[in-house]
Amino acid sequence: MPSRAGWGLAIVLFAMLTGAINYTLSLGFILTFLLAGMALVSLLHTWRNLAWLQVEAAPPPAVFAGQDAILQITLTEDRGRDRLAIAAGIGGQEPLFVDVPANGTGTLAIGSPTLKRGWHAIGTLTLSTGFPGGLFRAWSKLEPGVRCLVYPRPASSSLPLPQGNMPGRGGSLSSQVGDEDFAGLRLYQRGDSPRRIDWKASSREQGMYSREFHAESQQQVWLDLAQTPGSDLEQRLSQLTSWIMQAHDADQRYGLRLPGTHIAPAHSQAHYEACLRALALLEAE
Image (tube, rainbow, N blue to C red):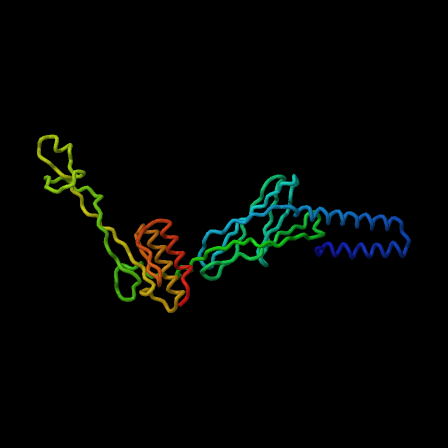
């Protein structure tokens, strides 16, 4: 379709044609038809600048509510022509531009605003171009068919991470016993595991010795939606999100209790993402 500049050129050409007919100007006809022919050639090249481009959209990584879901677009050209000034945009947002070299690829990262937790569907993607000349605009609308997981927005003024099973607090602490810390040697006692016998010390004919370990106590916190303060579900989920981020940054083991969901205490990137995913997909009561 003609752009604003294209419609302006059409009005000028119509005025030139009218003047050439009125005054029987041969040069006027030549100039008018020359400019009209150049405009038609521009129309063809504008269409070819967009035609046969291959589009691939990667699913956006998870974000927190209020952040932009970033859609990665890859444009591939395999017809041996440079594709210049290709615009891409979602909805009514300001488009981004990229040049795609002949037999090459071009990439774009387009943001789609998110407002609430859960699955966020990426809107219609529009590819367009006005090159060359800007007299016409060719476009194509695509449905990427991808969605983004949106975590709850973290609380703006978060409470400290729960340190006990106290009223109004959203978690409790417990301890785990381990035997990783070496404490010293003691005389061998019947029933000690052969793996704990210090054979090197025993070989000095000073008696049988066993290695002794101190039990390691590791704190772990339970985060429970039922004990989390907040005036509504979304505020409580925001507080839980903030606590999960605090515990993860502090390398602390934490578990999560939600209606119908029980995630055992752990500390890893996969555990962190699993807890946030459970919060994002929790259905309202």
